[in-house]
Every structure is written in C-alpha cells, then in structure tokens.
Image 1 (cartoon, rainbow, N blue to C red):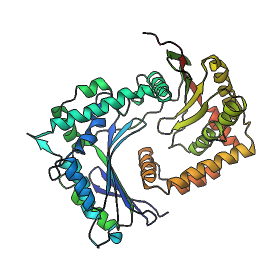
Image 2: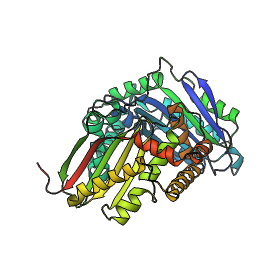
Image 3: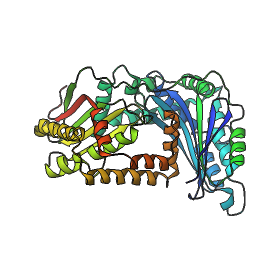
Image 4: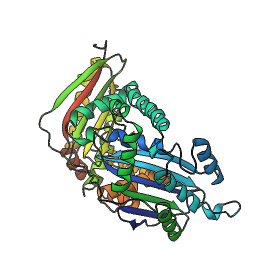
Length: 426
C-alpha cells in the first residue's frame, strides 16, 4: 500500500490522499467534525439525510439519481459516525476513475463537484432547508431511534453506556434523542447547517487512481465559497478511574438474558501500549479463539455468545454475553475468571499467536476496502497518531505475553448491566 499524504486545502480543511490502483473505483469522503453534545447530536444526525434530498441544481431524488447515472452509476451516501466524544457527519462517494471511463469522459471532477454541491448548495425555500424534507427525514430518524429497543443486545449496551458515562459526553447517542428530533424545524436545522459550515474542521479522504493535483483542484473548486470562522473545539477525555463498581439491570420480556460489562483503561489508540491492549482484547474475548469463546461459551456452555470489544478513543472495553437468567451469576463470575487469567499471564502460546493472526488478518482486510481504510485513517487523525495499518501490524507482531498481561491489569471493571428475562414492570 502506498504512503498516505495529508494536505491543507484551506483553513480548517484537510485532505488525506492515498494513491492506489488496487480498487475498482475511486473513493472520497467528506467529514465534518463536531463535539458530541446532547443539544446538537440530533441536529447532526438529521442534517446529512436532509441535504441529500435535493440541491439547487438537482432539486429532488429523481434528479440526483439521474446525475449519478451520468457518472456511470457513482455511489453516494451519508456519513454519521461517533468516535469517542466526536460526532462525524458528512458524505462519501465512489466512482470510476477517468482512466477507466468507457468513452474517455471526465468523472472525477464532476463527482467532486457534486459532493460540494450537496454540502454547500442544498435546495432552499425562502432561505431555509425545505420543510417537507426536514419533516420526512425526522420521521425516519425517530423510527431508527425508537427501534433500538428491539435489538436487546444493543439495547443492553446502550443502557450500560447511559449509566457508566453519566455526566460524560460519551453517553450521547450518535442518533440523538427522539424528543429533540421532534422539536427540530426547518429554521433550526438551517441555522445549524450554516454554523456547521463555518465552524467545523473538515477531513477529506481520497483513495484511488486520480493524481493528487486533480483531486486537490477538484475539491478546492467544489468547496469554493465555504464560510470559515473560528473552529469549534472537539476531542475525547479519558477517565480511567473507577469510583465504585455498579451492578444493575432491568427485567424485560426476553427468552435470553443480556449481560454487558464496562471496563475502563488509561490505554487508548494513541497510547504506546495500544497494540498490547488490542492483543489483550483478542485473547480475552475479541476473537473466535478467545478465552470467552472457547472456555465460557464452548467448554462451559454458559453463554449463547460471549465477546469483548474496544472503544479505542475513550479507553473502554465492553464485554457482551447472552445468558439464561438463572445462570447470570455463574456466567458473570466465569467471565471475570478469564479476565483474571489474562492478568496473571495465563496465556498459552497458541492463544497468543491465534490472537495475533486474527488482528493482522483484520488489518490486512481493511487495506482491501476503501471505506474501512477511510474509517481507519480518520480515526488516526482524531487520535493524533501517524501509523499505517502495516506499521500497526509490525507493532502487534512485537507484543509479548507479558505485555498482554500488563494491559489486562490496567483494565478496571466499572459497571455490570443485565437484562433479566421475565415479566416487564410497568
């Protein structure tokens, strides 16, 4: 994989450019970086879908689809991400490169121009975003928020995050809250759009065959007229201190209980010890050869599923398991026993190497997908780390068993949440 190059296009606007011919299409994303805040998350979740509904030059979805068809079926969609305590909104596109255009016509510049058009020149009515677009997209967003409870595994995680991070921005959902979405009108969303344009740092990412100068010129022209003012600060605070272990939950009409554990650590993706933490997660519960999968799920048959995952921006590990309600205490203790085994360095050579192979394979797979590379490099920028997937593989290959044990000892259990099967309380 070629080296990525990072360039300042204009104040507060950066381009990360990755020249490559391994993908069938070129890929570009535009990411506006916002502080994750309760009073703005709902606006941020709603805005991209409204902007996609129509532009001054292409006033409806039919016209937009026709435009994309002229670009040989270019793909275009919204971005809504949460990384730590940063909300990311924007768009991505993929399209064939000029070198592969069947009739030699230009595709790259018109595609980049369309991206800028959606962001800067949406369809307005009396100076405001179209009210009917706003109202219909509000319905879609509220439906997405309210449907979260239908996935009980995800719901248990959401409830744990609500409790564990009370008072911290991290508890705010990237989708916002239904009540706040309902209160948004065209005037409020238009004001937010104008503020976001003027006061948000923008990260652009491009991967493909098009030469840098063409991409630079296309994006600069596409963003011509972008208002610039003081940039709103964003970032993620890491709190690894656990004041008191909390064990809580609720009763719901489920046949399978949902157990979630939240652990804090001072290690994040920006820490020198992050490769050891990633290995620790893979050994403990983050792979199909992990202790949770092999011992707790398979050998002991205590869980329908059991896994762990990292939030590398916040310094958090979440453990998730499906458990029969009568086995809750036994499963909880078995999971914690495996964590203690990691802390004590009870890690076999096969466990260590299987975890290493799993992580290396995942990073190599990321290099084969432009969207995953986009997500990876954006994360690196937020962490302030200059490390390619290949370089991270080298660091993972250097991790020893004692490093994994040390990373496990830095994990502190903060909150346990369990959805117990039974009759729901009114």
